[in-house]
Length: 199
Image (tube, rainbow, N blue to C red; front, side, top):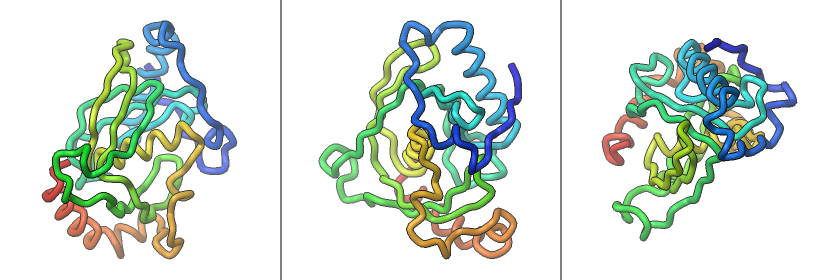
């Protein structure tokens, strides 16, 4: 497998709607090689996820993983997850275990394709439907920051970057300025959210 170059904001492929992978091609050598390259590239960059169009391949494939990530120490652990042709449904309070829990969380997000961070509102409870790397169909519920990671990565597949969802441009900062001026307060706030929601 190969660590690939990550496209940066302004590259036209990042704004393309990615194409679905035919289910009978999921186990093909080409698709499996793409998955391997995505995993290697994500890990080399300390990302929590990466979508195929971020490495110049406009297919609906993304991978996610959170272990001991120095970029995102507040994120709950997420085992390596291969996601092909995903769809997301926002869940109503009656569809989740904690109907009185928060519906929206404001997350200060970063991205491997954007040299900035900024505040984005994300749904706390989502349903996801996707194929894994073996071509097995999954229907699952994701919550909390894990749900936010899913929304961020699936946005990529629709040609949407997190900066498109930043409502207040004053929250935008470089990584260095975030680390100097916003990191501690954000981690304190978001850690309390993770403790409440559990993911």
